[in-house]
Image: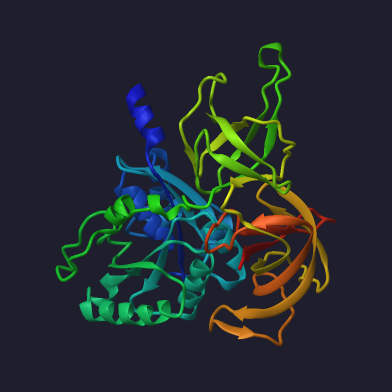
Length: 429
């Protein structure tokens, strides 16, 4: 590969997307089709899939085998764990999180979808909108995934009927009107035959929209980041203690949101002291003169300030007149991930950006029936895969925004101190 091609590859925009759908809707087949038709799989992988397909007695190549990595998945023909796949086209790089459709794997879906720019929701054209479609759409809405593509799959089994497609689109629009979903696209496809996945379908001349691959390559995601509220959680304080850098003190971390420039006045939380940004060094700077003119999410950088302020890991650098909420009482939606149920008044460790604290479950307000979207206010028993609204009180003040406004400063995880197991993923309201 030419060095210029390598530079272009590193500078290409990355789109993370997750897939969701009911069991047997064809998620793994669709991803296999995307990889196969965009020529993003190795020959030995394809040979292994062709060999397994013949052993199963299939006349066609079972592309679902490209993503079903667990033995139990291949045997049952279902997805159990989150499978990540990476591929690139000349326009973009992609990370796919193939998430399971079963209700008992809700926590896996939340994990796979938490960093996604886009959700692909598959609907079987023969069955229409099911309870699982409600559940996956609710989780996509809860996780504030900015873009949704509803792929109405298996159109070949309904004779590529426009009427079936229109009816399913109408049903889904009724559902999405009850959710916080902003940008929705609909595409009629056949993952098995390849219609409208990478190549335009000749079987559906009535559909004038784009193919799935065209939409994935061109959907606008650069404005999804929050470039207004400046948030820089400090992960590490760099003091080389070497003779040539005797006075160097840098604050390293990943920018959660906003744009920072040298010369900007900033405030340090929790102390409230103000200072001015002296310089910003990118992640791979070779010396302290390799500075940059601005830094924004999701860049990892080292900042230096023009005054000596006591800053340590867990502190946050923000713009002087644009502060996050600072509080010990936090109201949030949580997906419970542990086999041990949530304990009312239970104590847990908390991780929020780069800050560690402890908390107590102050109140369980209600559980959500994620199939009907109803609130169950009398059911306070929160078990694995349940989603609930709770309030916690932390031992230290946290600096946060609502999850809707900022997915990084608005997310939080709870940890069982005895086992170190992550027991809950929270979205701050």
